Image (cartoon, rainbow, N blue to C red; front, top):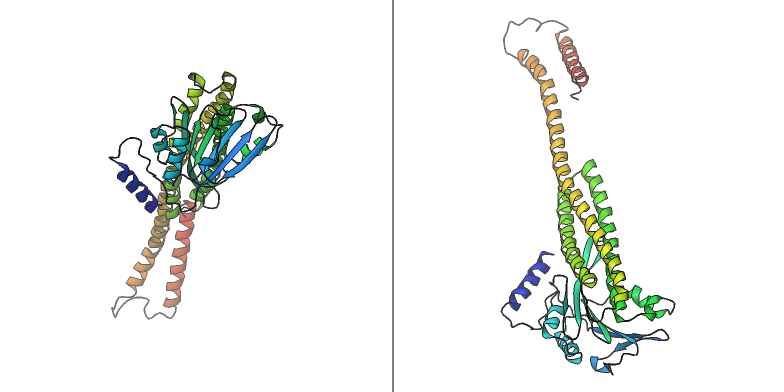
Length: 358
């Protein structure tokens, strides 16, 4: 993880000093060839095509159906530049698309609306949040989405488009943008649920048997919750623009749907804050538990030491090399010595238990 962050920082540093609009990829190294999918639909028909190149898209200004171009992979900057030329996108948009360190934001340009934010998926096996930058460009007759990697992030929306019974088939491209954002936000709930389960297990571990690894887990959870906060807080601001601003290409009848997404982000933000407080409490509990365990160990060692003080005294007295000592030549002295030792030990243990020190 540290190596990835260092590599990411080095790429950002290399980008420093370039002129605005430079299309320079900042993100994890990827080797696969990006995929291009074009989805076209209206109330009566639907089609999905895998494109060999961006030139396969004809009639860019055709508005007879909703068209959605999904690009899986942004590491090939030449492809991103070709898409920019095809749809006359501003160079600053292309710069932001290939920079995976972007803060979630919404920007309005002359011919489009540009939105970027993070998709957060909880990996139950690794018990961590896997982020992915998503960019959405809403033009007059087409929606373009960019993903960092080839995955099924938008599978649910695609499945709804396939069936004419769903509302999305009779709506415009702005509703498609809503559906994509809503899907990502819904996945936040799954990630939050995964983090909640992880914190519950960690809480039980901290109470029952805390170890040095428990502290590492607490710090890791703290970092992931902070990263989630950095992703969700700005997204709340992004969605608020759909409510307040009179954005071009956004039909007024669809604003209510964005209001619903905004409410979801508020709930997620509140949950994240609750989990952050819980995580901070876990660290205090861990330190208290470790201190209590140390106190218990010291208590046991102190009691053992206290028991052996009189035994050591007796053994020391009768271990002195004096010739004339009472009881040394008595027939039962050895037996009596051990009886005294047992009685003293038993009496002290009983006394400690009565005082609830043991």
